[in-house]
Image (cartoon, rainbow, N blue to C red; front, top):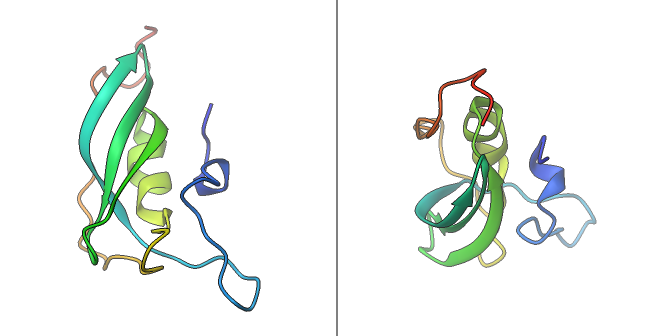
Amino acid sequence: MIRDASDLLAIVPVGRNGQRMEVNMRIKRILSQYRRDFTAEYECEHCGKVHVGQGYDDANFHNNVIPNMVCKSCGKKAGKNYRPLATKYPEGMEV
Protein backbone atom coordinates (compact mmCIF):
# COMPACT_ATOMS: atom_id res chain seq x y z
CA MET A 1 0.00 0.00 0.00
CA ILE A 2 1.29 3.46 -0.88
CA ARG A 3 0.77 5.82 2.04
CA ASP A 4 2.73 8.90 1.03
CA ALA A 5 5.04 10.23 -1.65
CA SER A 6 8.09 8.54 -0.10
CA ASP A 7 6.68 5.20 -1.26
CA LEU A 8 7.09 6.33 -4.88
CA LEU A 9 10.86 6.64 -5.06
CA ALA A 10 10.88 6.00 -8.80
CA ILE A 11 9.25 9.39 -9.31
CA VAL A 12 10.94 11.36 -6.51
CA PRO A 13 14.41 12.75 -7.35
CA VAL A 14 16.85 14.26 -4.88
CA GLY A 15 18.35 17.70 -5.48
CA ARG A 16 22.03 18.63 -5.42
CA ASN A 17 21.89 19.36 -1.71
CA GLY A 18 20.55 15.87 -0.96
CA GLN A 19 17.06 17.09 -0.14
CA ARG A 20 13.95 15.96 -1.91
CA MET A 21 12.76 18.20 -4.72
CA GLU A 22 9.05 18.98 -4.95
CA VAL A 23 6.86 18.79 -8.07
CA ASN A 24 3.24 18.07 -8.63
CA MET A 25 2.10 15.47 -11.10
CA ARG A 26 -1.35 14.69 -12.38
CA ILE A 27 -2.79 11.42 -13.61
CA LYS A 28 -2.89 11.58 -17.38
CA ARG A 29 -4.21 8.06 -17.95
CA ILE A 30 -4.75 4.93 -15.87
CA LEU A 31 -3.13 2.04 -17.74
CA SER A 32 -4.44 -0.80 -15.58
CA GLN A 33 -6.26 -1.27 -12.30
CA TYR A 34 -6.89 -4.25 -10.03
CA ARG A 35 -9.11 -3.43 -7.08
CA ARG A 36 -7.57 -0.21 -5.73
CA ASP A 37 -4.01 -0.75 -7.03
CA PHE A 38 -3.32 0.88 -10.39
CA THR A 39 -0.59 1.76 -12.85
CA ALA A 40 -0.88 5.17 -14.45
CA GLU A 41 0.85 7.73 -16.60
CA TYR A 42 1.62 10.78 -14.47
CA GLU A 43 2.18 14.03 -16.36
CA CYS A 44 4.15 16.96 -14.96
CA GLU A 45 2.10 20.14 -15.12
CA HIS A 46 5.23 22.21 -15.79
CA CYS A 47 7.37 20.39 -18.36
CA GLY A 48 4.76 17.96 -19.72
CA LYS A 49 7.04 14.93 -19.21
CA VAL A 50 5.13 11.68 -18.65
CA HIS A 51 6.27 9.09 -16.08
CA VAL A 52 4.70 5.69 -15.44
CA GLY A 53 4.15 4.77 -11.81
CA GLN A 54 2.03 2.83 -9.35
CA GLY A 55 -0.86 4.21 -7.34
CA TYR A 56 -3.54 3.35 -4.82
CA ASP A 57 -7.11 4.49 -5.46
CA ASP A 58 -8.16 6.06 -2.18
CA ALA A 59 -8.74 9.62 -1.00
CA ASN A 60 -5.37 9.80 0.79
CA PHE A 61 -3.45 8.96 -2.37
CA HIS A 62 -5.35 11.44 -4.54
CA ASN A 63 -5.38 14.26 -1.96
CA ASN A 64 -1.95 13.88 -0.32
CA VAL A 65 0.42 11.65 -2.29
CA ILE A 66 -0.07 12.85 -5.87
CA PRO A 67 0.22 16.56 -4.97
CA ASN A 68 3.62 15.82 -3.39
CA MET A 69 5.09 13.77 -6.25
CA VAL A 70 8.24 15.14 -7.81
CA CYS A 71 8.99 15.18 -11.54
CA LYS A 72 12.20 13.37 -12.49
CA SER A 73 12.78 15.80 -15.35
CA CYS A 74 12.26 19.34 -14.09
CA GLY A 75 11.99 18.99 -10.30
CA LYS A 76 9.07 21.40 -9.93
CA LYS A 77 5.86 21.25 -7.95
CA ALA A 78 2.54 22.58 -9.20
CA GLY A 79 0.68 25.34 -7.45
CA LYS A 80 -2.09 25.00 -4.94
CA ASN A 81 -4.65 24.68 -7.74
CA TYR A 82 -4.24 20.87 -7.97
CA ARG A 83 -7.64 19.18 -8.25
CA PRO A 84 -7.62 15.49 -7.22
CA LEU A 85 -9.55 12.88 -9.17
CA ALA A 86 -12.43 11.07 -7.53
CA THR A 87 -11.80 7.46 -6.54
CA LYS A 88 -13.30 4.68 -8.65
CA TYR A 89 -14.89 3.08 -5.59
CA PRO A 90 -16.47 4.95 -2.64
CA GLU A 91 -14.34 5.38 0.48
CA GLY A 92 -14.78 2.52 2.92
CA MET A 93 -16.02 0.12 0.28
CA GLU A 94 -14.19 -3.20 0.43
CA VAL A 95 -13.14 -4.22 -3.07
